[in-house]
Length: 302
Image (cartoon, rainbow, N blue to C red; front, side, top):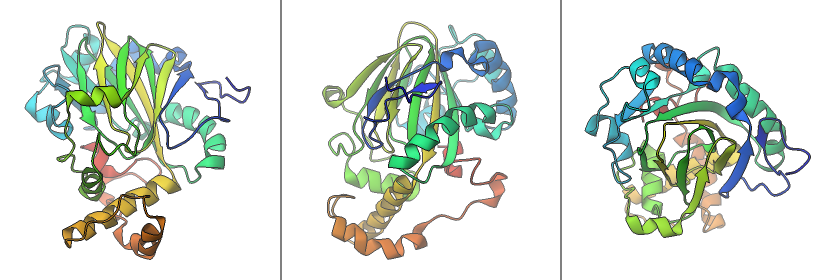
């Protein structure tokens, strides 16, 4: 690793490409806020604020990600699930942990170290977020995409992480990406078993992880023990521009125009730039948090 690596995320910034999937190392498994007992306490507190998402281990790679909690409900509370995750037969995510005054310090600790290096190559870090995933043995995170850049780090247990490049249109079509950015719908994102052969496959354990650029398709298989994974996410100027271009392309599709893929015809995207500000969503006051505290509010429920 480079001598410029941060204490928590160990990244060779001389080789880092913000729009390419890559392995990372870390030592966040040593952080006191990520110990199982602290996470159980936090989960109970976070559930009271409505920021827990969960489903049972009946979900598969092909389960629609947005619908997994309703299709395969986990009826146990966060405290019950987290305190006996080995036998809970469940997947649980603690969402937007930066909205908690204690766990915000964890997000800041990690991303404050990333920011000076990332700004040089992908400026405009904003909407910083954090997530904690606690998973029973042999449980799957369904195939999906997200909007943020994402450092996924393994804290406890072992997982197999499948990640596809953010411009892999065989894994997720351009039409599916346009729809996702326009409405957060993942209805056109479909799993097929033959996609496995196209993926980067990371067998991760504590101290290991993966960096996934914005809209990198991914699917995760937990292995034969309980697992704790953390995720640190953020937007940049390029991710916001990319998202707005996809929204503009979705508008064109609605008008019967088939646009080229975002980035495929720079001149075409440049023509749309003056109109992108009209597509930016206003910040919902009902969320009760500032833009610096949350990624897009829709991610609380998606």
